[in-house]
Length: 151
Image 1 (tube, rainbow, N blue to C red):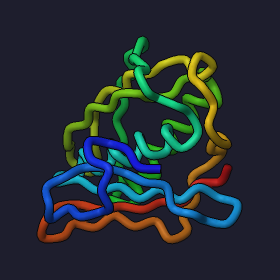
Image 2: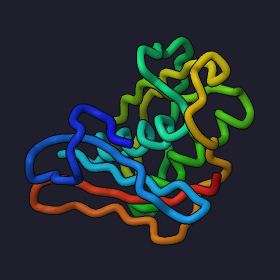
Image 3: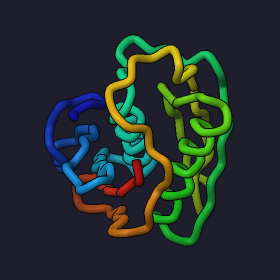
């Protein structure tokens, strides 16, 4: 799967943003990259959602304010994706637009969600975010992250 603004591999030095799924036994592995931490997190959310639904032309119809805080950037990533999985499980909603800004120890923003049941299914929905091999790093050209989810 490729998505985001550019369909290129993770090359934050090129100033591009994107995400892709990576083959992983019985799980979903998503990598994302972007010039900023917040855009990298948003790309990770988009990558997870695009892994199991066709988001082409989807419009956000519900505004969901979100704030997550944690001691480490990897934990912010996990908490944000936990929020996505929670909303899918409890409300049947999936973010199709993500707007994040930095706050002390985390991010705050808006998830514009659509009803998941109205979108074409393309894969297995995530059930939980794992802590195994979760990475979020800043390099000279931007941010990259990778995370595994149970499906």
